[in-house]
Each structure stands twice: as structure tokens, then as C-alpha cells.
Length: 357
Ligand SMILES: [Ca+2]
Image (cartoon, rainbow, N blue to C red; front, side, top):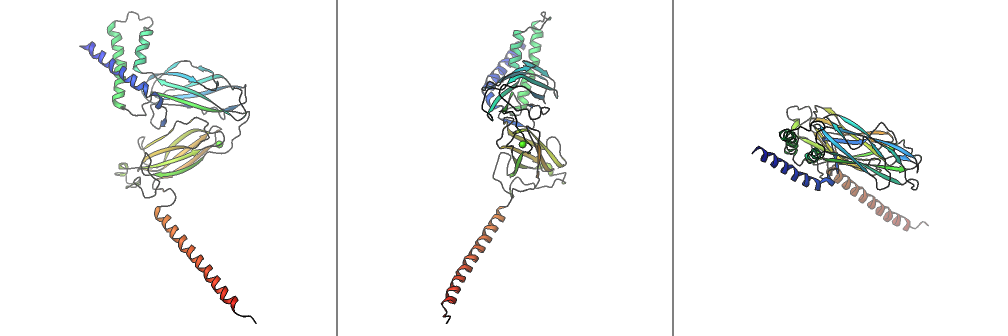
């Protein structure tokens, strides 16, 4: 009976693993504020994403585990042949809150024209219960070859039970990360100077998933941040559009700027863009009405920072009413000018037709 229960569990998570495997390609699409683990290029290396052909580089990445302890597997690829050796190789075990630096050494810049970009991708994958089972089959516990079948089953039960529990708790939550691919855009160039901070625009939204920009929208707060009894009943939404055209974007940080926040009063999401991307990228934020404002700090690859602040109750430029008023004023002024010109022409004609002698 007990055995069939475990077999059922195993079948359940194996089925999940195969379904999960199919959707793997999409788990890296977004970065969320509450992801179960995160990884990015280390900010200890400033302006590290350029070099002339033939030069050799080391890139450092940092993985932070925000969820329960687990094993992380690493792999890498570069379709441009800009590859190296990982240190540590293969995998690491991290407790919740622990972080690990992964170095990729001996990365030789390929022969490419000046200014061309080459890509390198590092992938971290949280080991699934399926992987744990396979590992246990391949590598029986060293020195403890006397493990009874019951002990092995207990181990499996613990791992599988935890995993099933996680699935039950997190459901299809995209922040329950199975894997994360971090790509860097490396520029083939001896020098890449960048003294300019990233640019940004702020657009207030009606909803977290979009909606048109408007100052009179559903995303406006009914209760003020100092109304502590009620302010947590609502949220407001804002989209930051960020770009760095020189060394490219590296880090995005989003923080509350005032009010009675708690860790659950702010969520954000952005595209998992390549580090060093010079394109515009959007960061969508949902903030509790208890927060007075939200600050986004964007850092480029060279280390230049810029901060952008969105205010609770702020608006994206003009309201519809203001736009209509301006159109009406323009029409009135325009008609006035046309009238004046016509009047002047008629007056001039009459005046010039008067005989002067
Ligand atoms: Ca810059």
C-alpha cells in the first residue's frame, strides 16, 4: 500500500517533469521581482563586455537562491564560438539565501569586424525530483552501500514530497523558476567608452498587463497612502521604458520611495533581455496604494546609473480633457488668424483701390 503510494508520487512528478520539459523554453522569458532564483552578470566587473579579436576574458555571474535549498546545474553555449570553461563546473547546492559566483574563464574573442556583437549564454537549472531520482540510480550513496530499500524510499519520499509540495503551492506560477538563461551581448572592440547614463520614460497603466495610458484610469488609487486601514486594498501600475545606447543595459532595481510598504507591496516584471542590450526594454510595476512612489534604478554595463521615479497618482503627460482643450484652443486661434488675414486682405484691397491723386 505504502509502496504503491510512493510509486504514484513518482509517476505524478515524472508526468510533471515531461510536461515541464516542454515548456522549458519559455521559463526564461521574464524576470520577476519574486523569482525563486536569479542570476546575472556580476556587477564587480565594470565595463567587461568588450574586447578586440583574440583577447581572452573572464566573465563572472552570480546566482542567488531565494527559495528552499536545492541543487543547481549549469550549462553554457555560444553560437558565435565565444566560449570558455566554467568554474565551478557542473553544479552547486545552495541553501535559501545563499549565492554562488560562476566564473567563465578563457573566453577568447572570435575574429569579427570591429563593433560586431557576439553572444554567450549561461544556463542555470534547478534540479528537479526527476533529476534527483536519476542521480540516485547512477550514484548510489558513497560508503553507505548498505542503504536498505526502505531508507532509499524514505529519501525519495522526502525529495518527491518536497517537490510535489512546491508544485501544489506554486501551481503554474512563472516565478517558480525551473531554469534561467542569461545571455550577454559582447562587443568586438578594443575600446567602448560610455559616460552616459541610461535613458527612461514613464507610462502610467490601467492594469498590470497593459491597458492604455491615461491619467484618469482604473489604476488610480481610491485611498491615499496615509489611509493605513484601506490603502492596501488597491494597486497602481506603471511601465518604465529603459534604454542605454552605449555599453547597454545591465541591472534593473525597483524600490519603493515612500509610504508604508512591506515586501508584498511591490511586484515587477521585465523581459529577460541580453545584458549589454542597446534596445529599449520595458519594466512593468504593480505597486500597493500604500506606496507613495516607485523608483527604478537602471545601471549600464559601464556602471553608469540613472534613477526614475513614478508617483502614486501620477499621469502620463496630458489627460484626455487637457488634450481636447488644447485642440479647441488651437482651432479657435487658427480660425482667428485666418479671419485676421482675410480681413487684412480685404481692408488692404479697399484701401489700395482709393485713388491717391
Ligand atoms: Ca550608457
